[in-house]
Amino acid sequence: MSRVMVLNGPNLGRLGSREPDVYGDQDLSALRVLLVEEAGEGVEVDLRQTDDEAELVHWLHEAVDERTPVILNPAAFTHYSYALRDAAALVTKAGIPLVEVHISNPHAREEFRHRSVISGIASGVIAGFGFDSYVLALEAVRRLG
Ligand code: DQA
Image (tube, rainbow, N blue to C red; front, top):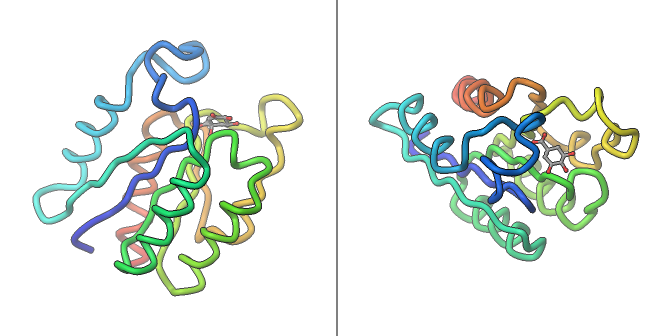
């Protein structure tokens, strides 16, 4: 693996100030620094965030076309976006790893967060470990080759 896409959905651009009791007080640039460090020299970390469902879908198409593994935090889209699920299925059905991650543990929160429409087609799911969810996902993607 020479590159990994780390894709983040809506409102995750507000990390640092958004509900710090739930998501911590570090922002996406701190996450980027952490992952670049964890990835080491041979792996490029391509971390992006958007509030736009269509943009996220297009990034997943890009992952398929370039055969790039994906770490995906779909944020609120997790719970209802069939468009995102179908795009994520394109990735895993092409044999490319896609790990769903969450900073919080959605199962310990409101009921609407208990359902993920993405998990059923993801290679695996890691949730509840803060930014370490992404670090663990990076290791999972590495092991999946
Ligand atoms: C989240 C959990 C989602 O329920 C929520 O909508 C988010 C963030 C997480 O990382 O814990 O925006 O995906």
